[in-house]
Length: 298
Image (cartoon, rainbow, N blue to C red; front, side, top):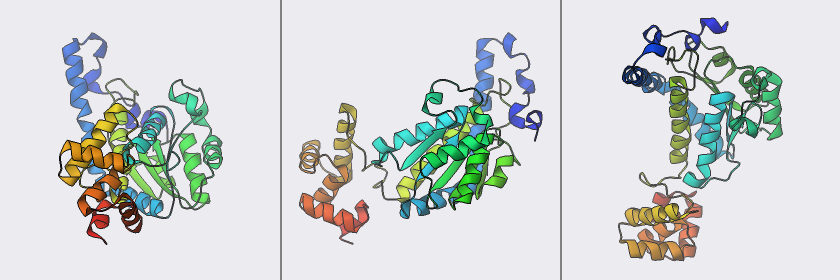
């Protein structure tokens, strides 16, 4: 598929005079176009549901969620991956972001890295990709060789695959078990898929990781009870989470959190089940880390 035939590479008629627009008009146009990103995600919700189901099943088997992409798409996957440990208490290797050109490409473009399909496969071999893992290939154009090669390698080892593209009928869709296609259309700045195509991909990454972690017991109600209080802001948040979850005051929550060794889940179970730290830990272990059944005593 030629690049010029892709909607993400097409020109938006409304922005033909972008360089002559008053700033207010330019921004109004950008804002109007940005509204198309969540609409595109809405249309793809059934496929996103299926992708989440694959990720949840893989994680239950000890598999990893692995994002694979180049340029903006790769950076978005990397961003989602690095936010999971502090938010959900995952190990750094549980959610992985791979970007064409390596970690240095997160801040500086590595020319030509995305054009080699063998590099995608090589990067996945470098993290010892296994059949229990899920690989999510992110490519706005839907044809990035780095992503195509990576997804094909993932399939060859038995791993499940998901593609996220911003063109309908994208080439990458035929290389994945679940194909998420986001019809974001032409960009205000022709071909600049860091704009609404990037926004739509970010929304999907948010959904994939958050929904998978909720389903995996990383959340109690709407509270991030596996948060790691690694700085002053997160310590304060952890105390407020314990207080809210256990329906108690701030001082009681702080004391429980200290007694729990800073583990929010343990503190919540201690307060709600009125038990010791060790009993709370044992209850959580029997409940696969889920607060609600741990409190109910299974």
